[in-house]
Length: 350
Length: 242
Image (tube, rainbow over all chains, first blue to last red; front, side, top):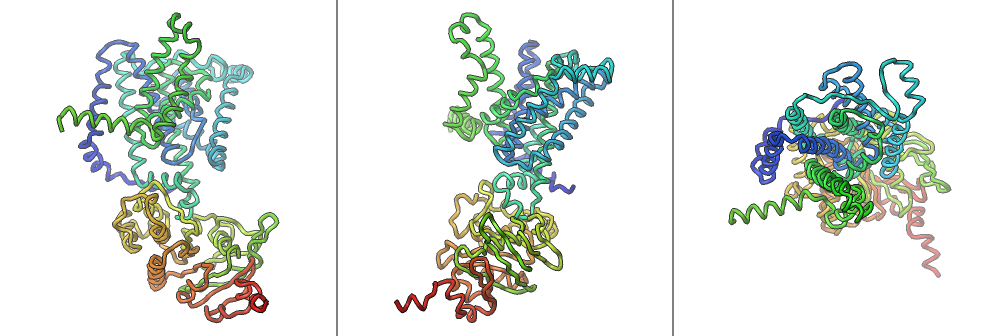
């Protein structure tokens, strides 16, 4: 398969980017993120780990929906499949974490291919429903008790299916700070690759499919090939996120396939803004930290008595999503950046 | 193209049409609204597949082939209702065509962006290269359509109603553009429902009505053909008398 892709203009782009306000702000945020392990607080490090993993996950969804126009409601498939593959290989085959991670992502890619080929015959809402249905099927499949018994009899000493999933997955490194920095690096690389793909000539083809698929065909583009490719790229990064998430939670269970995770990705990416990739970081940041605050509030018996179930994160997030769609349909990233820049200029007295 | 028929549920849009276009020709396809001109283009370009009949291009059977393959053989079309990649710059709009396997063969020697720029210049849109199509007037979009087709380096260019919705001045621009393309060696097949637009442009006209072939020849002959006149004006004679 021949793919249109060129790498040489990356350096020039990076030089221009670092000169902009947006570039400087990003670098500042990244430096801030690097410093987090210095707090030595495992709880905070843990939340930031989740935030970075969700950033990769949301960015992978944003890539598929924002650049290629393929709205998947079943992104949890990749999260779950890669999660299981990573957990299984680390726990029962004694793979080092990074081979397991890559293997998990590759399996997610292959899975993306297997379900992507039939799914891409579906368009628009039907694609969304089709992918949703697939994730539900996998959820039920991995829950199935009879399958779990069958697997354990065939491969004694290992677990694959069943309600408990695979547990006791060791962390990347016994030192949480090092684990944190590795996840940080993986996030940076993922975001850079996805952003750059979006701006490359390959991204031009992807965007043409998003804007007008028939038109892209009439321009001589094999849209099926590129759509499958996009599914695989997205699946790869979602798979990386799935593997990391499994390691972070030291285990995986069928819950990873829940439609809820797919919706999380959609919420995070939409809050940040579609087709921005870096907006996913903002979306994931708001999502994870607000979610944590809401969880703490919900744990407080006084407050949860007062509000009943209304501190449920998904309830609050649905409201936020509705408000954002109404008042900032292109996401929060652009307006936030603009206001920060105004503030910055004000402080400098320009 | 031979014995081409396309039936939609209960409606035969194209009925047993057969004609041939030779390399380097400049041919018009006319017929009143609903005659089946666009359907013929959809069939040739692979957007729809025919109920029966065959289409050959350059000695090869392309009936039912997928659109992008046909385009990469050199048979490219534009659309009557302008289609563009709305949220991408004009340059990127052309880039997409230049990135198709056929377009790339030529474009990569020049550099994709550079080659697209020359195409934009040739259709007269170079000073708007960084703008998205959503803010352009209709005439510019028509030019963009032709530019997008040129990016794939067409051998046979199908232009579906390139003049519809244009002011006189814009139409003249497009006419000049199409003429120069033809003199560069591109075979051009163009539709129109107003005979006058095509009269001065093409040396050969094929006329159709209600999915059927009615005439083929130089525009003056076709214009005076009794069946063609009837198709356009109804049974005009009787009308005039009463």
